[in-house]
Length: 388
Ligand code: LRH
Ligand code: MN
Ligand code: MN
Image 1 (spheres, rainbow, N blue to C red):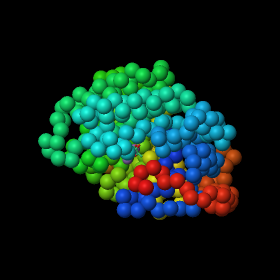
Image 2 (image 1 turned 60 degrees about the vertical axis):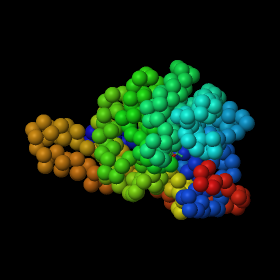
Image 3 (image 1 turned 120 degrees about the horizontal axis):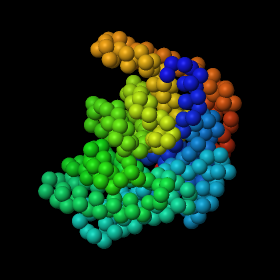
Image 4 (image 1 turned 135 degrees about the vertical axis):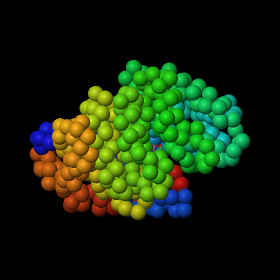
């Protein structure tokens, strides 16, 4: 697609979901840094997410994390989101923060703890019903630290059993997105360490079980775009948790460490038809802003995804296919790189103006006075949820 008006139309339709936890205080296990103006409640996190949408026009939903965003009335939380011009997106489960989960959640050798974890996952589906959410995001910290610590195979059986019970509970318009992660917090063996393990479980269960690719959850050097191409081809790519990493699960701003990788990923998304809303590929951010301002960090991240997408859409696909078919190695690579090396910022600025937005979302946010207002109004903001 090299016709710019078609590229702009496609970009206008893009929806990037921001995570509620990006707005809270965060850090590492060494220190959680308290910033000024940080949300004190789930409602205030949603208000901050609404600012990202207000200035970018392409971030209409916010993911919640239970229990970090626990409230008494989820329908009211959903109404609050609507009043602020956004909606609640994926519900993220949390079976990694209780002392009970030291040896695992759904794979724990103790059936009582497995039951507790499953009950939480089912409760998350109840919440999805109340907020009208389509996606349940499942991430398990389950794994072992020492060889011999537990029976790897039995743990797979327990995982399969729990996933089947959650699958069973999903409504017709709901699905779960199964996340995998190479390591951390488990250091020897993780029960869902890679896309193959997630994919195998999802394949057995059916169409409402999809794999989610968190870009920070792979070994260094992994060809993530291959995983994307493969899963899309199999109809099993549920979406992304976008972030950047230099070393492990760094949760830095997407497109900051390796914008070229993000472009390559977006190319496979476009190539595989995953950009069409019907395919249900969810573009979500999963990041935290430990040292930078949070709302601005989210705006920058959304813009980074847009830039990579614009470049991927600009690839001259016809010329690329012709060069590939002819075995023109250098020509094919040059066509690919031409798109990557295009400065798409003027095109995106133009698009924003057409959408009635300021061409520079960061400048517009800074000029809005929102930050000064929250710094003034909010004292004692909440930690995002972990490491506090
Ligand atoms: C795990 C993870 C998962 C959690 C989020 C806070 O590392 O990526 O998606 O829910 O971080
Ligand atoms: Mn994630
Ligand atoms: Mn992660």
